[in-house]
Image (cartoon, rainbow, N blue to C red; front, side, top):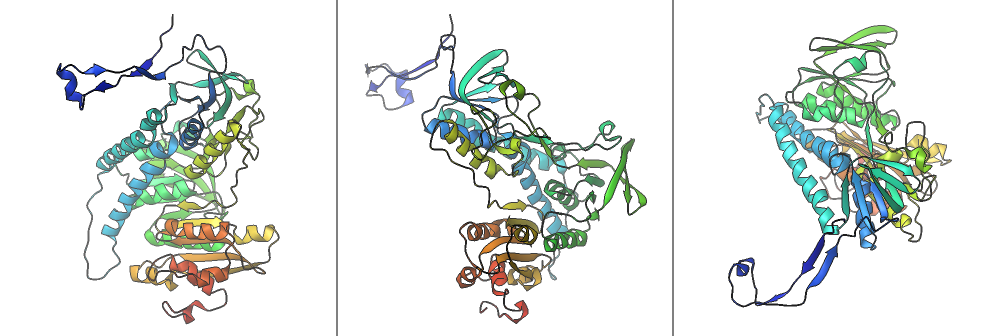
Length: 510
């Protein structure tokens, strides 16, 4: 006979606090009311859940909350730590350490004459302890506690599909009307000779280092490589970023790449572009990366080596073939515009699809997938306007089309580029390396894209996101009031300089 968990509420007249139960004063119980009962799983033969979610990150929790609010029976399967990448090993831990690095950098190199600041050696172990405490608190508050708050079931273990309507977890077969795959992605290792035999860091293990290395070599120069490279540079390491492409951020507008290259170089980060990686080897505590640049061999030595060359979907253990779910060349789950896989009972959302790798995109997709899976009027995902931020200093933020993308889509394009040394907020901050760029339709003047390298660019980009999403024009931005001495004023200056020389503008007066 199987066990059932039943929760009952019994109202008691006259009882006003928990201490009352310790005193026998003749309280009178009312009628018992059953408020929760766990169904006997031996009796239920099929359709254990309306929605079974595999994974427990942003997409998974968004889907679970949406499904519960629609009255569905929901369970979530997680093989590791609850919360997924963002709270545990991604956004939260990296950004709190990045902030620590920024403060350390400013203490060592403050731009104001008349103020003397200094910084001692960074205590990486203490920073990591504080980071872990923050992560644990947010994981508990924003994920673990919500399981009971919303009343869905958590099943710990590895899920694998048995057929198109059944998964197995720890030997238990579970059926559902619909499934959501939200298993995220993990760091990907490039095929470089000797790398597998070297003790290298990933974006996960780098955040657990107990000491700041004297030298750090980084293979890759995407947003993860840049953020973590600058973090350790700001904490005192000598950092070398290496990449295959001939310019950093090759998919961004050239002005953005140039500004980022200038900023990192000014700060002392060593950038190597156009590198062909030949091999990696270890000699005691030293790692050596052998590269070829412009036909010349170079050897980069460092105490630590960070590999940050992209991410791969977590699909290997799912046995998706058994469920008739098709995957792409990199193992990503292929979905349609409704987030359906090749099996109409199974949906996928978040990083596992290799769409935009942002937690806010994953959360948005999770909600859409849950509604579609539960039979609500079908909703297509709309990822035409997705802002992206790289949390370096200066930060890099972009939304909408680049100039090249706009031309490829058939637009006649007009652009405006404002260097950061023309933005009053940057001038008074004495941090003037950066740029604002707006891309507009030359005929209608609708804003098609905005691209920024500046302090607080991640905060500014939301205004640009609204402009692109809702079809605002350059004139709309000109006629909007921008608070003076904010970085957001750079957007208005860029709008004004479609037809004017920025050097001819007066402060506030346009």
